[in-house]
Image 1: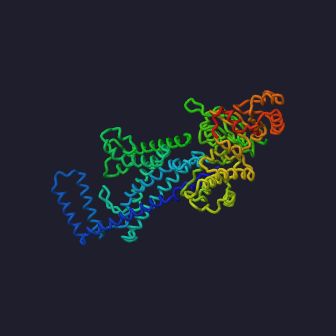
Image 2: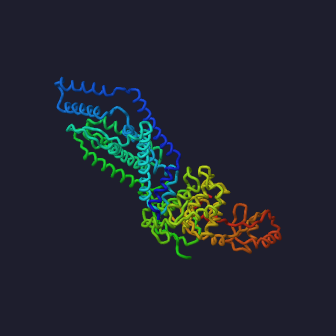
Image 3: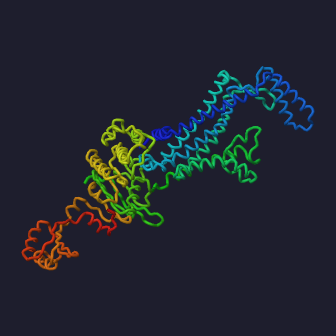
Length: 318
Length: 306
């Protein structure tokens, strides 16, 4: 009987021995490099030598707004007050808030996890369907491994690839930031202000991790969905096309239909958990974080179950 | 006969109320090459795919070395090697990487064993080339190699000769011979080509429309082949009358302008002498055999494709 670890190794061989996979990886790293280059170029265009005066000027404007505008709500008033306080802190500490640091690159790179998700979805959609397209499914299934085991090995290998891409995105953004702005920025704290108006220094590591964390959730959902589609279709190109279609059209469809209350049960309405972060509004007012998590878990279970059912119960006739 | 390597017990597959394979039961003893013969669509491939779990059974059971494929699939499959049609292998991997891939699924397939199999099938010169550069014959060999890596007790070949040229078919046959001899494997092979089966198999099962028609030993079939003598003569009716004196009337048939006598060719001199002495012109006389092909065609009602 086959051991699961050997089956996973086999699946990894099939992913990483294909030139296509390395093209994808190169594409991702290049994208991070391009993003970093554009950020650096953009910052060099708007750099001002006298940032202190800029901040003082800005604070004066804000102060004026606070005193003269009578229509400001309480909320806006505290926000403006916090902003002034933060700017004063920057002046005091002689920190230029507009100066790019290594962490700005890492932070921005978290939006490129969307690209990593896209690439992983292609791999996931290909995972089962390609075996049918190649005709290798027969020899794969006639072996001392149950179909459930084979499916698990394929899923684990796919998740491994997803993790690799995430780490690569992070690492290349970190490297690019380090090269462009110096690695001494690593220890720099993140400065923020609480609702109570207290200046806080926190770890940038945690902040970056949090940003990446949210994208991991949507990545996991999209990849699992693609995996299910892969076991439903017996043609790799169909599986890839449908997975990408759902992924790209889904969220705009949800936004378009947000007037209807049933939209909240769609996967795409819940997949972006950043809508519950501070300052963001959820797609529908009645939606909460725990509601979305429940919906996501339900979808996840359904995806896995359907994929399993389709893969283990169908006859391989052709 | 020793313990049966494969036992089929009332194996049935129905799709949409139609029985594709109907109540099939037979045993294959160790070391036998067993052919599975029938016209296209008779259910050969379906049966073979049920044995290896690619298709589920509606009823019945297949036991490999006494282990039920249905209940203990993984364990049963450790004793099976298979090639289903033209073996499709991973084209972006080299031959060797493909073998390593398949070897990893089994316990105890060493590097030495892989090399041994590579040599056995004469693949050593091109084993490190990508499979996409292999010819069909090479791929077939690599397919056999992956099937025997783990020293299975049962080798299952589903239409292995599809698409192979005559040289390739012959090559495959030679490898199978070598394998049954050197590794003591039982083989079950399906085909619609009798001529191939004749050269490969010890026994054949003939199935038609999902039902087992007959199982015969080819050795017996060969022995039981009836000889006949075919005579072409000037006055065929006179010849018949003359010969009915020495042969039983039931053994003589008039087939068009030819006279057929069920007898061994040893009788030819006597017949010739008799005809010539009675002044009947002998235009031709020859010994003939009722071929296996004809026998099988009789059994399947002429549907066999040969």
